[in-house]
Each structure stands twice: as structure tokens, then as C-alpha cells.
Length: 342
Image (tube, rainbow, N blue to C red; front, side, top):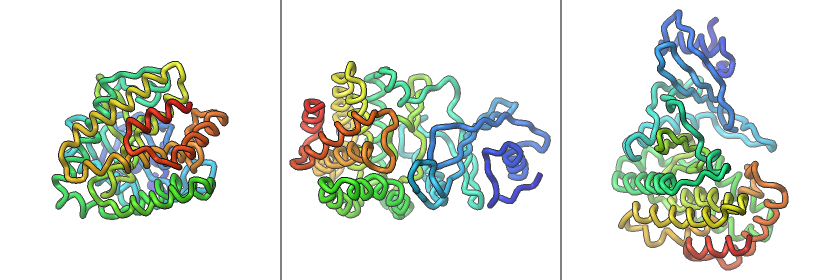
């Protein structure tokens, strides 16, 4: 069976097998195990396990995302992710990034090493109340290392990631612009934040730094999903990631104090890892604003948190729009004010 790369659907086993053979990635008579993976809205994702024991994950970008509202994005973004894999292996702590194996521009897909079993998704662990301060520390140091080292190598990294169109279509529009259109009381805050974000070109920004994109293997955190990586404002990554710890504090009242403490630990260890880069001192107030914006976007934007009830969404929306009237200037103040209002 011969499949043209423009028609390839890697979730169809016969098509995927033919592509693997034609690409020379496996032997002509080889029969690997192929298992579609769930959870993502923007890609087809399949685990391929070879008889030799070698295992890969294949990602093929979708033009129309799998969400309830119409949401489109150029499938070329998977090649931005491939570039991200190449660079992040140099910038992140050792072992934190899977290796890139192959890239197919016509089919908009990449092949990378699979994280060995047994592993667990960090988001799943957190929702089960499995909060480990060592994991929080690794999460903070991973982001801080990428931000600092990319800045140190900015003459090489900045030109490679100057295009922020995927960040615009997958983050600023669905998270901030869409939410502003839904909630007039927050519109001015969000529009000003969008304009400020576009002005800040400081370091490599992951854009999807979230527990759902972290696998825990042998007590080590491994980061996935780099398709919105770009040269921009690191405050977005901080706010985007803090949102998940604070939202879980909201969702799990029995562990509220623990998640609030984890959020504070995360910021402190990130800032310590970042060190004395020239823009570090001005980062915190922007990070606080991005945290507010993301807390709101995850209950009122195009991609709401699926584990929140309607009641929790309404409560978080009320709290955050209130805090936006006089935004906290520090992360510790933001955490305190958010938790007090729950």
C-alpha cells in the first residue's frame, strides 16, 4: 500500500506502516506495534514499538483542532516543534527532552524517542493529589534553565525562533483575545497585556509549559509538546504554568495549602535558577499579570480546564476579574490574594 504524504493519516495503521517502510525507518518486513495516544487536541499522536524494543512517538499536526469551537492552526507548527526539540536538548537539563528521530515536511509529522515505561503524566498525578516538592523543584529549574541559557545564546537562538505566529494563533488569540471578547470587564486588562507581550522579545518561550506536557520517569521530569515555542516574553511561561498549580489548589480544597505552597516554591526556585539576567527584576509584575490572564482564560477561553465544574469556573472568573482591577505586583501577593478568595 503506497500512501502519498499529503494524504497520510498516521492513526490508520495500514497507512502508517507503509509510511514507516517507505521512509526507511523500519525494515520492509517489519511489523511494529502501533497504538494511538489520546489527550491532545492539536495532533494525531501514535506510539510505535519495534520488535527490537525501540519505541517512538509520532506526531502529525492537525489543521482543525479537536475542540468544541472552531479553532484552526497551520500544521507547519510541527516543524517548529522539531526545531524546539533540537534546541531544547542543548538548553534544558540532561534527560529532560526526548531526542528527535525524523521529520517529514510534506506529511507535517515528526518522530521522536518515546519516554520508556513505566512513566506517569504529571497532571494526572497532581489531580490525584500526588504533589512532590522534588517534582515542583525540577519543574522550576527546567524552565529557569531554558530561559537563562537561551538568553546567553541569544545570537543563535533568537533568529531561529523569531516567528511567533503559532504563539499568536494557539495562545494569544484563543486564551487572551477570545476571553476579552467574552468578558468585557477583563477586556482592557487583556488587550494591554497582549500589546505588552508582543513588545517583550527577551528569551526562548516554551508557550505550553504545563503539567500535562510533563512525564515523570524514574522520578525525573521530561518535557513534551513544543509547537508554540518562540522568542518572546518569559513571563508568559511563568503565568501559564503557575495557573495549573493555583487551579488545582482551587479544585482540590483538601490540598489547597499544599498547592499554594508549591506555587510559591515554584516561583522562588525559578527566579533563583534564572539568576542575574538583565531583565529578571522587571519580570515578576508581568508574570503576575500573565497568571491572572491565564487563570481567567482557562475558565472562559477556547480551552477551559476540563476538570472544573461550572460552579468552579464561575467562581474563578469572579475572583480573577476582581483581582485584575488592582493587579498584584508580586507572585507571593497574587498567591495569597487568590487563595484567600476561594
